[in-house]
Every structure is written in structure tokens, then in C-alpha cells.
Image 1 (cartoon, one colour):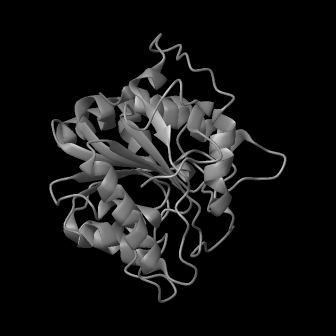
Image 2: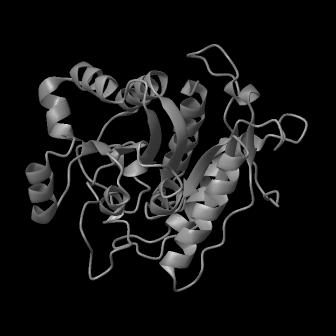
Amino acid sequence: MFHPPALHFLGLSEFETSFEKAKFIVIPIPYDSTASYRPGSRNGPQSILLASQNLELFDLESQSEPYQIGIYTLAQVEPTRGSVLETLTSITNITQKILELKKIPVLLGGEHTITIGSTNTFSEDVIVVSLDAHSDLRDNYLGDQYCHASVMRRIIDQGKLVLEVGVRSMSKEEFDLIQQNHLPVYTTETLRQQGIQQIIQELKEQVAGRKVYLSIDMDVFDPSEAPGVSTPEPGGLDYFNTVELIQNICQSTHIVGCDLVEVTPIPGNNITEFLAAKILYKTLGYIH
């Protein structure tokens, strides 16, 4: 049913992990057909997998080796050329199969559009927590309703609550939608004014005990820490604040799925993919 990849996350061998025993199933999806600024996130999954092979398996913070919970990587999902809807259907189907086997799907993008396909698998009671520089709430962008700029709008259309953190860029249309519908969007300005601890406390209250799908867009980081993204925005989060946010979300909820998206490799500069690999490994370690 599932095929092994050329690269495993963390470089894990069959002796260290197996599909049958794994808790997490990593699914690379090299899709970036709707990129509006810098294309290349199709190369993100492979660059992250390659970088991850140079991480230490021992996590100093937890003084443990999180990989022992079981992390298995599948071969990449090939996008359907010219059809975003067929690509999203393929993502939904493989995510559903992973869930039926009582495992947690971990998608590696590719552009943020892939999240529409994976979240479509889950019931309406699942909260989608998105760490992102952009609100992605446009009804369409350049006439396209299924693109990186409309991801969260389509997920809201699925009937799910979307909670966004780290936003610092949006259109007037999106601003009006947030204000009129009182959508829970925490901008970086809000974080700056209220402080990270206050925001973490509010987030924990909103998601405590709930089922959560976590989506990490790497442009949530400040470009000084993650320059290799499709649409960089000044004024982003730093590593320690982001780790603290993710840790509190994971430890306050039941994570049913997650993804990490929008790494667009820069030739000769591997900072972003190493950061992405580290963040993903720590995230999986936080999920209980």
C-alpha cells in the first residue's frame, strides 16, 4: 500500500523504526503550483529530509530521544499537474488511510495549499491551529479559490475553527472578515503588546482538551532566522518563542495531525531547512 522513500526523516533505518510500530507517518508533498512570489517549495520536503539526517537524535531540552516513539517516512505524494483539486484529493486519501491505521499524519510541504487536503479528512470538532505570517483568509487570489492565500478560508468552509498565531500580513478583505466574525487571530503586534506568556495562556484556554491539527508555515519565523521561504515577512517570531508556543499547544491538547510547509530552499544557504527539521523533531517530541 505504501512505498518507502529515498530519504527518511532523521535518517532512521528500518532497524530503528518501522511503519507498523511508528506513531508518526511523515508524508512529503512537493507541491507549489500556486506560489505567488518565490517558487521552489516543491523542493522543501527533500531539503528538510536531507537536513534532518544531520540532527542529533538526543534532545537536550527533554533529555530524551523522541525518535523512539516511532517516526516513519513514506515516499512523496506526486502532485497532479494542472489540477490542484486532484492533488488535494490524493492528499485527503492518503491522510485518511494513515488515520484508519491509528497513526498521526505529518505532512511535509510544499506550499500551504496542501493543508486543505489533509484537514478535509478530519471532523468539524478538530481545531486547526496555524502558525503563519499571513492570515490566508482570502476568498480567492487572482481568481483561484484553492491556493496558498486562501488555505484557512477553505478550512473554515470545512466547518472547522481556525486559530491563527504570528500573523503580520493581510488584505483589507481579510481584515474585515476577521473583525466581522471575531476570528481568533493573534498578530505579532498582539504578541508584542500583551507578551508571549499572556498569549500562550489564552491559547491553552481555547484548545485545552480539544483535538487539534497543527500547521506550521515556516514564514511565521522572522526572515533573519528563516530566509528560505516563499513569501518572507519582516517582524516574525524567533526560535524560542515559537518552540514555547508549540510546546504549550501540544501539551494542552490532543494533536491528531500536523504539517510543516513553505520551505523554499536557497542555494548555498541551508539555514531554513535545518530550522524546519529541528522544529518538526521537537514538535513530534512534544506530542503526547
